[in-house]
Image 1 (cartoon, helix red, strand yellow):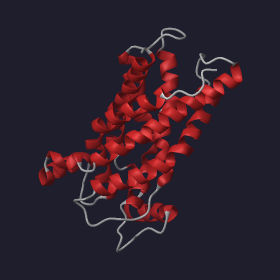
Image 2 (tube, helix red, strand yellow):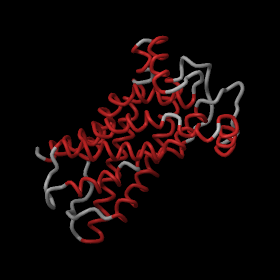
Image 3 (tube, rainbow, N blue to C red):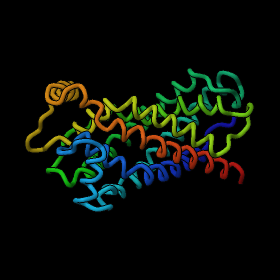
Image 4 (cartoon, one colour):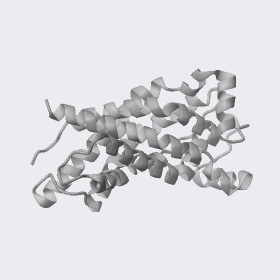
Length: 262
């Protein structure tokens, strides 16, 4: 067995840093749409942020996730890859083989359980920083939705296998970006309803708290704004998910290739 590999963690850290820089402006727009007030649609939100806060408004809260989400991604990629390798070698005695859905799911769940403790507080602080132009905010964290990050792995791995020219053959950067981008869009669109609830819980007012918990937030949001409220930011998520995830997986794969070529 090849055992534990540290380079997965390092490559995950690099991939996380790259995707954070690329995706943060649209992440700010998404957060404002889901938890803020006065925005008619995505385009109106972008114009309003730019008019009131200039370009710097889109990068509010970047320094914290740049330092911390990179750590989160490092843990996610490191745990996921090492767990998948361990399961595969335990079952077959060899590392190289095509993707197995059981291995992908078990590895994703393991990475999710271990990384959720890092991801939830990071996301909470990021959202509060992004909402600085709104009324004073505080509130509880909806850490359950951290799973949308993990959902990237299964479609990405399956797409890479489908696009691969042959067993063991390396994908070129274009196909890595394509697989990563599609996986990112799928996972973010799928997670949008839960993401809306999470954002609202995290941006709840400290002095006039509206939501008692997850179920209460869902019911109140539906009562006040209708079913469409759970799809606020879905366009931003779909657009944002592609370059973010494409950049993350490309940086990860190229970094891993570099480290293992030393």
